[in-house]
Length: 398
Ligand SMILES: Nc1ncnc2c1ncn2[C@@H]1O[C@H](COP(=O)(O)OP(=O)(O)O)[C@@H](O)[C@H]1O
Ligand SMILES: [Mg+2]
Image (cartoon, rainbow, N blue to C red; front, side):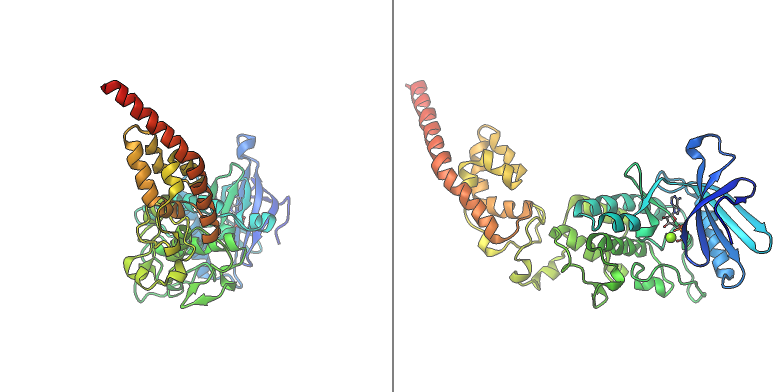
């Protein structure tokens, strides 16, 4: 039994336990040989060989140390040491850099559900780490991405820890394999011993669903192996579709790699393909507002379409509240009038797609307000402006 203050290798003084999964213990320790205070805290992972702990566990533990040694990334803890103690038990120890912060699992318990923006920021940061891992030769698959293996650093950056399930070679057909990963986060193919880079993408998606809903994905209902999360959260359509795609049960339907998933989340594009949209009933897309202004796949509800007087008569003011920034062109002389016409024609569709509206009703009330103000204020000002310009032009000609 290990205890706080115990000294290992005459160097690592155990402080307190960070985790204990039955066969592995993870401790925060003080490195007495550290050169300065900043790197004096380390994490020591220990595996006691024998009993329930078998060769497979030791193989994974050694692989964890080996891989960690080879990795060099800002947001992955650095490898420090690996040792073996032979007293009454045979102990193996892996020492790594300590990341000050808390795991996303702890953060979820403390603060409750994450917002869409938080979840997207986390997704982007993890995808950048995965891009690094998957692009290594041979590529490194983490295979156990979940909230407890992601650390929210004190510097507000996300770190990936726990390479205890890692795979660094393509699995061979017909060779026995050790099942790794955590139920609820790991995709089906992983339980069949076939992990691919897209398996890490699935686990990231399941992790994000947990952070957003506060419910462990294993406890959410499933339909044809798809996690049903949309009843529990109100997300922008683009992000909802991105999450559905990244957690598709079949790896071929997910993004092909972390870079593609990263580009898609950054651009906010909705990944509905044409063939899928044909089967969508209008009731299914009734509130797809905020799906992205130039999203060509999302159908706008019929109620939304039509001429927009507010956008036409007051294009300079209207575009701010509707977040239709392309309308800034209306400030450019000569093009201004053309842009006002385009906004009159396309304004409703763009305003619907560019920001999230609570309902069609809210959208219509908002636009009605602009139309009335446009007719009361915008039109008289425009008429005065045009009369003024006309008289100036006539004066100039004659
Ligand atoms: N390098 C690290 N810096 C800070 N905390 C860590 C670090 N490594 C692990 N932890 C914390 O310890 C917990 C257990 O460590 P982990 O490596 O995930 O062990 P296990 O393989 O038993 O899951 C993690 O959930 C995390 O909270
Ligand atoms: Mg872990």
